[in-house]
Amino acid sequence: MSSIFFCGVDLAKHHFSLHAVDDRGKVILHKSVSRAKLLTTLANMPAMRIGIEACSGAHYWARAFTQLGHDTRIMAAKYVSPYRTLNDAIAICEAVQRRNTRFVPVKSPERQAILAIHRMREHWVQERTALINRIRALLAEFGIVVPTGRAAVHREVPLILEAAENGLPDIARAVLADCFEHLQTLNQRVEDTDQCFEMVTKASPNAQRILNVRGVGPQTATAIIAAIGKGEQFDSGRDFAAWLGLVPKQYSTGGKPRLGRISKRGDKYLRTLLVHGARAVITNLGEKQDRLSVWGRNVLERRGMNRAIVALAAKNARIIWALLHNQTEYQDYAA
Image 1 (cartoon, rainbow, N blue to C red):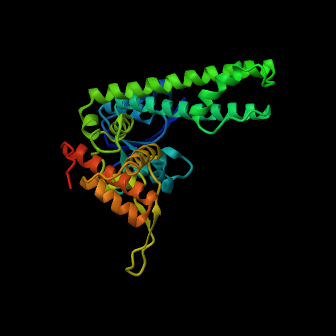
Image 2 (spheres, helix red, strand yellow):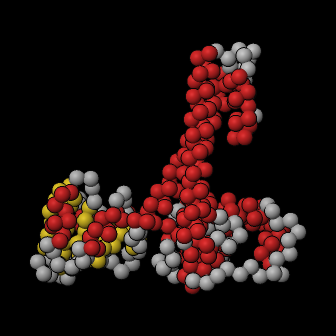
Image 3 (tube, rainbow, N blue to C red):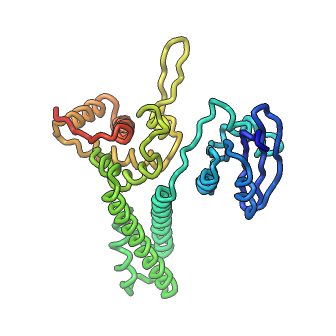
C-alpha cells in the first residue's frame, strides 16, 4: 500500500467511510471502519493527503490525523458537491486532489475553546431576548403592558410582581417570578463571558494589537483571533472583507461595472460584530477632526448612515488583517 497518495474520509458519529487512491487514480482502499478503529487504520498507512469535509468534529480529526503524519485538509461542502455520487468518501477524495479547492486552516484546541465561549454567549443572548419577549407577552394577556426595551423589563417586572392590586393571579405571578429569576441568571452568564473576553484579550498580543482599532472591543478581537489566527489563509485585506461578506456583489457586463448590495457571505457572527462596532463609531463622530472621523462624515453625507456603517466595517476588516498579517501596531493619524 505504499502507492497511496490521496484519501477521502467521510466523517460520521460511529462508522467512517475511507476511499484512497494512488497517484494514477487506482483505488487502493475502499472500506468502512468504526470509530474505535479509525485512528488505528490510518496509523498503519504511509503518509498521504487526507481530505475531510468541514463539519462538527472536523478540526479534532484533522489534528488527530496530522499527529499520525498525514497531510490533512479540511474543505467546505461546496467543493465536494460537484464530485458527489453514491459515496461521499469518493467525492472528498476527488475534491482534495483539485488545485482550485480552497482548504480551511485547522484550528487549535485553544482557539476552538474561545469560539465555544462566543457560541454560548450568542445562545444566551438569544435565549434572553426570547425570554424577555415571553414575559412581556404573558403580562399583556392580563392587561399589563411593559415598555419596549430590556431595561424597561428589568425595571417594571419587580414592581408588577410586588403590586397586589394589579389583578395578576397568584399562579401567573409565581410563573413570572421564576421567569424573571432565570432572566437574571442569563444576565449574569453574559456578564461572565464578557469578563472572560477581557481576560483572553489581556493574554493575547494579537488581540491587544487589533483592540486599538476604533469600533473593535474585546468580544470582536477575541472572535477574530479565534476564527482566523494571523490571517495567513487570506492574500489581502480585501479577501478577508469578502470572506466576511462586506464587499458588494458585482453585476458587471459589457465593461460597465455595476455594484449592488453586500454579499453577506461568510461568517455572520464576525460580520455582525464589526457592523455593530462601526455603528457605534459612526453615531459618535461629532466634530472630531481626526482623519477617520473626517472620512466617516464625508461618507455619511454622501451615502447615508447604513452605507457609512458598512463602509467602516469593511475598512476595519482590512485594517485588522494588515495588523495581524504584518504584525504591526495601529496608528490613528490626525487630520
